[in-house]
Amino acid sequence: MSRAMYRGLLLGAVGGAILLAAAAPASAKLLPLSERTYGVLLSDRDRNQILLTRDLNGDGDATDPGEVKAYFDQTNQSGLPAPVGDGLTIFQASDRAIYVGDGQTDTVYRLFDKNRDGDANDPGEARIFFSGTGGAGSGNASSLMLPTPNGIGEDADGNLYLVNAGTASLPFDGIYKLRDLNGDGDANDAGESAVWQDFTPPWPAASPFEIAVVDGVVYTIDTNGGQPDAIWRSRDINDDGDANDFGLGEAGTLLAEPNAFGVPLGFAMGAGEKGLYVMHETATGATTGQVFRLNDLDGSGTIDSAAEAILVWAETQLPVGFVFDVGFALDVGPGDSLMLSLNSGSAGGKILVYLVDLNRDGDYMDAGETRIWGTAQSQGGFISTVRTAEFIAAAPEPVTAGLLGLGLAGAIVAYRRQGRPAAGG
Image 1 (cartoon, one colour):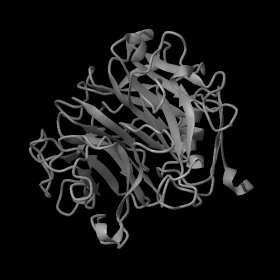
Image 2 (cartoon, rainbow, N blue to C red):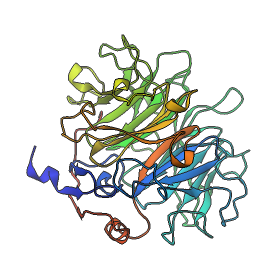
Image 3 (cartoon, helix red, strand yellow):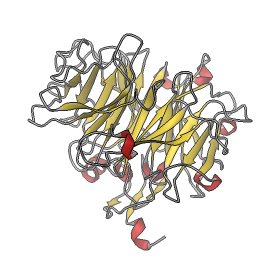
Image 4 (cartoon, rainbow, N blue to C red):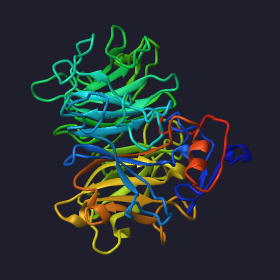
């Protein structure tokens, strides 16, 4: 690999405890992974709030006093009466705004910490960005319903892609494309929202969860009703504003179950510098939860060789007393570090697990690479039923100023974005 592919280097990620190298191939999100070190946001389905968690003392977790605070909840001063009833997804866009998809209010919130006090509860820091027709908000000009906003992604032009899972009595499963064209802070006006892809024709049993946008390709992980779980690959080939021209190959399958590589699929997927990461609580021929990394090395559009599906972590790496029952979500951070959102009937399974490839061997199986970021049992007991987590950068100032102002060790060197071997073409 060329020297130019390592122009991004961050010394001391959160609290300066860990050396993280940011590979120069372009990130799946416009905000470079090397910059997303301010903290980790999490949504808890029982507590009806978004929390900001940070490792301020560099010990590899967020369980110490002062490391957890409410980022967005019912105390907000923006006039939103019932926010985050069921926060299903959190996404930080390239402008560092935070988007939260809420399944109880059928709404996407836009949060921005204007005064840099570590929350979005102050006046003017939270607003409804997109409101599903028939939900708690005023609806949108396209009359799109939003019963289950499960995932959000962003392309190189700043368009947001929102995956919606329908229900028995509500519209189809598919992807909406959103853009605030008139600058009023939402995507509810005419021409600002549209169906980018209707999953019904190619995948009638669809029940999509997370999405990732990589080099113009949108990937969606789907439990697919009674059909085999799969990852769909979608692209607007003819540039007509949607991916519904199925005869042109705008919809395809990256990987499905069962497969020759023993990769289990489910709810969780995230895109990093090295490929797509998927997590599930069971695996073919195994009784432990696992994380795999997928990378379409030959550009065929499918995962078709063992070299393209690599096991990078297993539940056996968890410390004694912790279990992996249900893997709701994962997010990818600097240096392809991972944050796993796990849940269980026991307190030892209600955890956030932080994975760091310390020796850069491509997996998280070595000593010290599996860390418990937070649990239901830890200081403050800030986890009850965590749905999702997201590595974020500081806002609104450049991240270098934000990190230095917080006394965090390290410096960021900007790197040139390059094309990279994506998860699929």
